[in-house]
Length: 402
Ligand SMILES: Cc1cc2nc3c(=O)[nH]c(=O)nc-3n(C[C@H](O)[C@H](O)[C@H](O)COP(=O)(O)OP(=O)(O)OC[C@H]3O[C@@H](n4cnc5c(N)ncnc54)[C@H](O)[C@@H]3O)c2cc1C
Image (tube, rainbow, N blue to C red):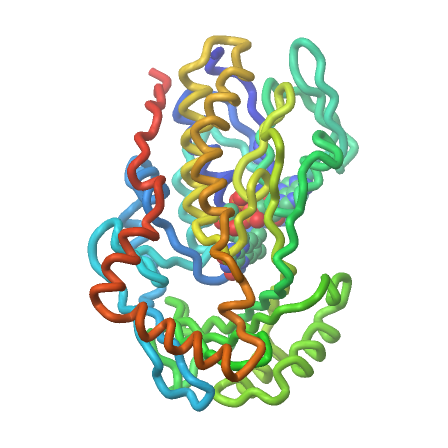
């Protein structure tokens, strides 16, 4: 490939800056476009595992990420009265991650680290997005929301689950697979009741509630619930808060405090979980990356590791390709990534209902399930199994520009 080829990346969260890092390293001229007016610092606890961790290591960022981890010491399942049912402490060593991984970090902090790691050759543009994409034999003419037009050789779409550019280029090809669950996250005040465990309340009524530590002196709260359809779409924050109050009105433990905290938090994030399944990830000079291509949702887990891995694999194959052979590089990227994406998207039968039981009997069964899973022998086996196939895949070589 001509290593001064111009690449436009859209999205500055995880996949976008990771791709910018590696494509710049391979000698491409990289511009990154972000729709938000500035780097979005919000988001809750995410983790980096397996090949994602290996890519971070190759970026020289493993220590920087470790220095910003949330300090979570493990995951604890609680009964309705708040009593501990079972616990899964963080396990040392690679390939042994349980529900809490060794590298747990806030999404905004990871995003910041990735952006800062990019070299000065990367151009960042905030508050702008793509409105049109016209490809010809020599490149792509990109129309931007500020009315301007620019030409690029390649476009990498890393805009997350609701990607607009994906819809522009791929029309109705991508399928969204709704999982029938709303998740809501917010940052609330930390109190003496909070410790460094991820506390997960098992409660009937098809609901989940949880509290997680962060490294910023606050606490991250989650309230999730099963629904028949996307009933909360388009509601403003006041109506979302009211809907959460109604849904969790009868739940005890720390839930009344979480609801009060959500009332005053400025980062309430409510999402109707859906996976993205695309029959193909590239069309001509445009390629999809990260959640825009394959959102697995927190239920599948590993979305951040897949985004970081995918960014590297894409850049590596482009770095190896001859001028004009981008489609072949995109094919190889897709071939490498598809199996691990499909694996992550395959959810255990009964998900998410089994983890958010409707009845008291279901809640009791889940408690027993976590107790058995927490036995040291089962835990050690399970963490090996859940480390995923990506841990054993060999990453392609990236040819750095000289
Ligand atoms: C604000 C925020 C909070 C999140 N919180 C959590 C969380 O708490 N837990 C969790 O598991 N996952 C969370 N995620 C999702 C998580 O980051 C991803 O699942 C994963 O890391 C893969 O990231 P990605 O870069 O592919 O996509 P995303 O992280 O979704 O990032 C997409 C980026 O593209 C930008 N963008 C969108 N449309 C356009 C456009 N048309 N033009 C230009 N830019 C565009 C967005 O503003 C965003 O910065 C969050 C994402 C965001 C954006």
